[in-house]
Image (cartoon, rainbow, N blue to C red; front, top):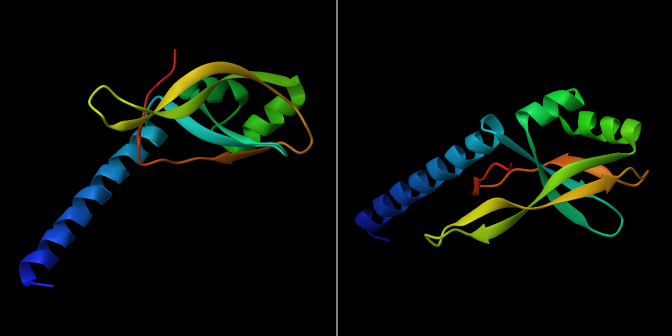
Length: 120
């Protein structure tokens, strides 16, 4: 590969990494935190605002799981990837769903390089 090609590749990689880190920072420090809910049958991505997480007792998956166990159900926003009007992919709220506590349910942190949109 030529010197020009290597330099171009390095710059492109740095730009992609910066974009990904910016999106991850938004997802973690912005209005919406994403989590994956895993069951025996399937898995979904949910989004909770900082205020919603604070009401559950904290911003980690364990607090969500313990709150779900204590309450029996939680109402959350399911998130999915969609294409924005400019053609970019983004993680956006799909619909409000209810999660029912189950002994085989697992909650994990979820990160994405995509822009994460807040829910209502």
